[in-house]
Amino acid sequence: MSKNIQSPHTYPSLIFSNARVLTSNSSQPRAEAIALAGNRIIAVGSNNDVLALAQPNTHLIDAECCSLLPGFIDSHAHLFIGSAELDNVFLDDVRSLEDLSMKLKKHVAAHPDVEWVCGSHMKYSILPSNEPLTRHHLDAILPEQPIALMAYDYHTLWVNTKALKLAGILNGYDPGLTGVVVMGADDMVTGELREAAAYHPVLIHAGPWGRATSELTSGQPRDISAQADLRTIKKGLSFIARHGITSLHNMDGNLTKLALYASLEGSGELSTRLSVPYGITPSTTSSELEEAAHMHSEVHSDLLHAGAVKFFMDGVIESGTAYLLEEYADAQGLCGHPFYSLEQFIELGSLCDRLGMQIRVHSIGDAATRQTLDGFEAIQRINGPRDGRHRIEHIELLHPRDVSRFAELGVIASMQPLHLAGSNFENDVWLRRVGETRWDHGFSWRSLRNAGARLAFGSDWPVVSPNPMLGLDRAINRKPWLPHLASQSQSLLDYLSSYTRDAAFAEFQEDQKGQLRPGYLADIVLLSADLESIPSEEISQVVPLMTICDGHITYEA
Image (cartoon, rainbow, N blue to C red; front, side, top):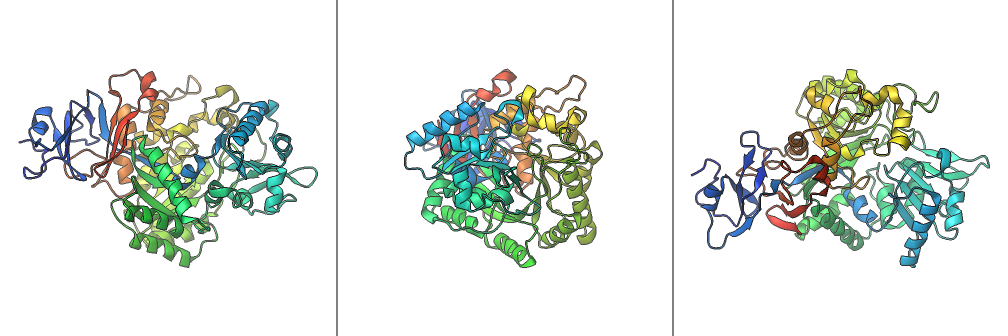
């Protein structure tokens, strides 16, 4: 009997045969068949060896030479916000004010009872000559209904006058260092609100999606309608299962949200494994950090666990709120600023580390990432080394001097291939703001991997689609922005490792999932093609045929 049969006395409930199995297990990278019993894998091997285990009641599935993989682990997503956003009007194809007007009016006609007109995935430049979008443009479309339109990166919100009046901020207010309220020559808000601290007063009024998004950078609980919110989350769980996702590292959380997810687990309706952090702000107190540690101790199962905290070190390049080492190429004197001083981050981070919490830090700019690495280095000196597996999320711009520090400090690089700039090269805000001299510092996937860093890939849904096949297409087909720049593209197997085995490592679950091997959890995705045999330009068309999480079929085409 094959050494990859867990036990001759455990009989399979389901067998996949004739598959192109990519296991993410370096000791057995490929196989033909796999057998499951309950929520565990019991055999991985040849068709003959695995099919020999079949019993009369074993469900047999012929994979017809398609790829069979560990279930995708999305290392960066926002489940509740993404779920609530499914009811918004999607604006990713809007290229002009005329397009915007047509889509918003069409949405209102189809939803006549909607109170707020909420839209998502707006481009930063839809007006000629990079003219800023203002409340006056939106007033001309729908003056009597409040409008809230979110940028694709979730760092800028555009609203009309009605929305500003409902929020009581038409004449402006001070959001502190972590937000920007853009003011006009008339001493009133133009309608552009940058970062959560600025748009929070508006979105708390804007329905379930607005309420969820308003606390993006905060661990503070909000008022909820439990049954409505549970329905919203279940819709989102079904949506991500369609993309072959069996685990998700949530990037916003608090006790209120954790209670919702725990309720779904208790009713048997949590169809995706969740890792939930506690949101940290510069004003977070030590008692609140104790609450975060309490989350970890109270909730820890195969399906749902806490144990992490989430910081925001800066904003994003497109809105000028990312923290850069040198000034923006299109804004003299502007470098952005960090949301925490180094001393603040070390003080809060060292306490989190002493409490045994994993630290996840949103960092876009090269200065923000250097400061975060400096903070992690100081935390190690203060507390001593431990297997904390602290993470930096996004890392869009990275100075070459800091590439090797990830492996040296044991910091995980959590990155999102679909964030890659340059899809609309001629009018790409990211490329213009960074400037050509720094393009070779952008989205440094291969540089980090070559330097020994561990990469965990994800989507940042709902900022982009949660579809891992779209990320794979972007990762392996990436071309340098200029001919002399080094390639940062990824191989198929490296990409899959970062979405499976290394993503499991990033949440301390590498001995339970992320690989197809006997004894591991039965989290599997069957795709519609053999990834190793199709042309790379066809990868984005591949879809899941079946998703299995914890031994249960959560999606079937």
